[in-house]
Length: 424
Length: 152
Image 1 (tube, each protein chain N blue to C red):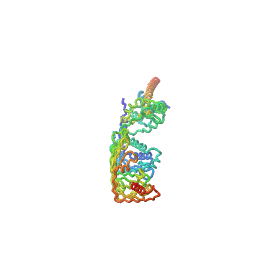
Image 2: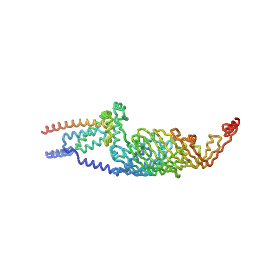
Image 3: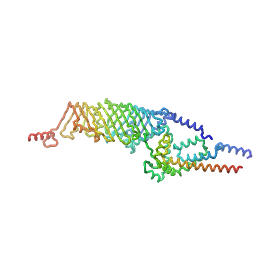
Image 4: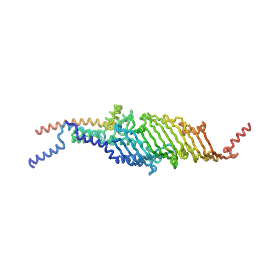
């Protein structure tokens, strides 16, 4: 007895082959629209994708003009990628994972917002409030999960329907009770065995970025700091860094300031394997206009609000090391050239001070860095005499004070000391 | 109606019946009914359901019997949902490590068998499919004998 319908089998194999190699190429517009719909819903903002070209045969995905609108300021983008291209490992699709061997992106623009507590976030505070109290990380994780599921050509089955169908029927109480113990997962309806994730669902082995622009918006400031012309590479970027033994490594270089040639470079390593958190970043920057940095620094120390800097450029280099999420003490070398500033605002704190102005001065210091807030200790650098300065033009105006007001008298202390010396 | 017309009508009805139903053996009919019952008990559109459907189409099953069994399975599914869930959970909890090792294999990971409802549906569906096949084969054999006796 002939057990197999050979025509049906041949037809199915043909359909499978066509589906595998042709449909994804023909249906790019559908995939693009679906991507836009899901990403718009998940991020709660408008996501647009100019063009998408998926080729299963070549295992590539190429997109152009990806735009994510800032929910806080409609009409303004918070992320743009002019061009991106991914080369995937097809064999991993059979394991329900996405391994992108090589990803290239150029013309990327990211807008980062500083919060009141000094942290930097991808979405601004207005957007976070609009996000219905759902963490942004969760939304991004949803998008990554969706991407790893839907980029996979084998994912043709409607698994979601199965999940909905399974959820329609309640699990018996005894099953739910049994499932509470052990390394298992109990969902609201139906029992699901938690599968181990011994390998990331989405892994980017090598990411190359070119012509990246990062706009940092300081908290409460009108002007933003622009890092532009950034190019760099990043390895082992994954959705689950805790299960990947290889650390994330990166190196980048670019320019800071919109119309200022201030080059910077950074290289580092992030190791989050098996719950540890070891980070090491080496950085160097030069010729950075201090005025551009002040709006960011304001949040971390009230001292910066008292300094009015007219000109001055910063050169710095150093290393930031975190071992198990704890900052290891290091030193950061900083040098400020051509500093022209006044600290006249200090007269509210120091009554005898009328004016204090530096012009064309140079300042070099080795600033200790450790895990105590505010992490960079300028006061300790001065105490340890790790500061050298060359002041070319210095102006200090003081109030001599009067005899009745001993607290505010600048010269009072000096006279008292002199009188004591004479009495002796 | 003349005898010739009656004969012609009988012939045409028989032809249509033969065209639709064919001349399947009792065993083929019974196994097809079983396959249909199993398919009906799975959630339509799930990976396991698609696999079953492809197998039913590729293997030389008797499609009308599959459809009949499918209807019966679909009627049974809501009533057996709780049993499927319990059975699946019990199986998964008996050897979680073994299941984890199996369910992360390539292609198997797409079947969503880590869900108790899916795994239980497959196993309970298999029991009911075997039961339906056994009942069908008995009924078909007895029916054929009865019809043979009646015609002779």
